[in-house]
Image 1: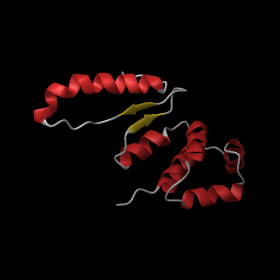
Image 2 (image 1 turned 90 degrees about the horizontal axis):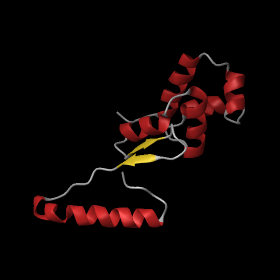
Image 3 (image 1 turned 120 degrees about the horizontal axis):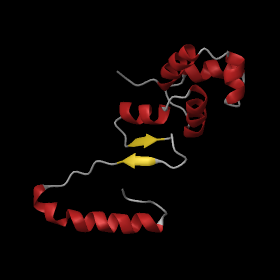
Image 4 (image 1 turned 45 degrees about the horizontal axis):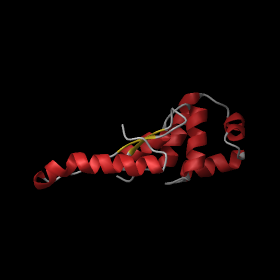
Length: 114
C-alpha cells in the first residue's frame, strides 16, 4: 500500500475540529488549496512543517517512518535524525574509529553526534 500524506493530513485536520478558513490562514494558503493538499501523495517539507505545527502532529516523523526513512523530529527547533548503520562482522573493530570520524566531520557542519 502506497503512503498518501494528503489523506493523513485530512484525517488529522478532521480530528482537530479547526475550521477550514482558520486552518488555511494558519498555513498561509487559500481554502481551495487545502482540498488540493488533501489529494497530494507528496508535499514539500516547508508546508508539511507548517501543517504539523497547526495540527500539533509530527507529520515529518510519521512520513519518515512510513517510508522507512531516517526518523526526523520537529518538536525541537533542531532536528534529530536516527540513522541505522549496517556493520559487517569483519569491520566491527573499525566501528569506533568510523563513529569518531563521523563526529568530527559532523562538527565541521555544526552537527552533534549523540
